Amino acid sequence: GGEARAGGAAGPKYEETRIVGLSTALANPHDLADWIGIDVHGHAPHAKRGLYNFRPSVRPIPMEVHIQGFPGRHYCPRMATMNKPCYAAIREHSPTKPVIIFVASRRQTRLTALDLISYAAGDENPTAFLGCDERKVEQIASNLTDESLAHTLSFGIGLHHAGLTSRDRD
Image 1 (cartoon, rainbow, N blue to C red):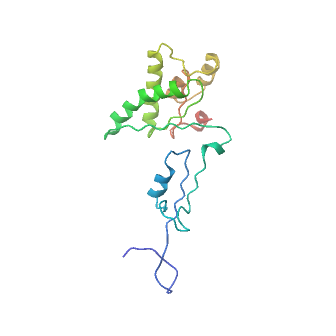
Image 2: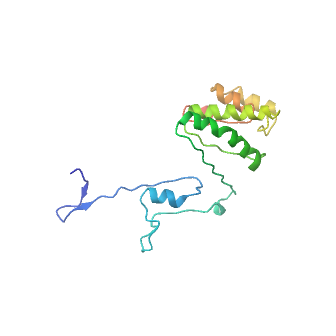
Image 3: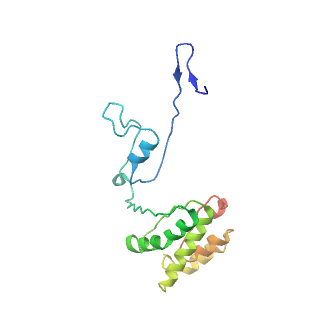
């Protein structure tokens, strides 16, 4: 077959694929470890070998993690249904502090930001996320190449995706 063999004629010795996974805080590190092949259920000396889970309490800056699942088989409708609960979660858990929202695509980054602005406007506070003087943000936005970033930044929402120029990222 197509198995990889290491060593020489000493016998069938197979190379193991090494997976190095780095992540931000996870609510389910054992599920992820199990998925990549780490023995998380055993009690042998090698069980859980390779799983390093640093608790949020060891972070230099405290962080709360809130994870919410959404049903749905089709990507676009599911993503659209997440934005309103996401806005509600921000209002509940972090109304005045920074928030990071991870989405799966460049397009979804823009759509989520625009929906958040829309929900804030519906609450009659479109600049709810703006934590500084509007003139300062306008000055920064006027130097940006990405029009979506310039627009959302004027409401206090930044974007980051692979399509941004290095200057816009800075």
